[in-house]
Length: 161
Image 1: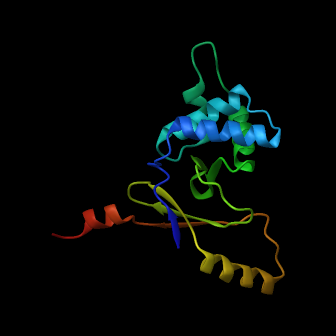
Image 2: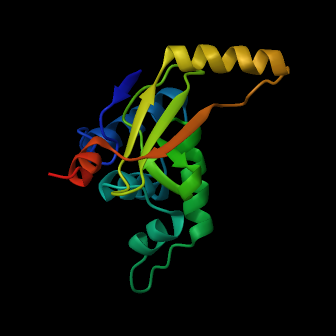
């Protein structure tokens, strides 16, 4: 299993993530609108998975209310471009600083104690899932798996001394 260390504490800086988003949009001939940029920045700065309503609240200011539906539209765009991921079980979003190959499956490791979200990919897991899907005659649009448990740090804190 290949791990992309700690999404929540991603080592890629906010500026680097914004630059990647701008480059992706430019290469694909897409607009990186001010709202899309603000949403991307809010997701990248958060340091944890957050919901669209949290993002809308963060972007709103006196006299400038950002509607959650607008944030959802921006998030949909960012997900389509591979710049953010949705954690379905939490209805929350995290940045993705990794360039995934087309069709590459993603496994999210979600700590139920501290809320940390880590990302991993596994050829063995993908191969097994592909065989299962073929036997079932099912063609997925995309594959994202979520595994909830305890991260190493929380497990160590829970160990009796």
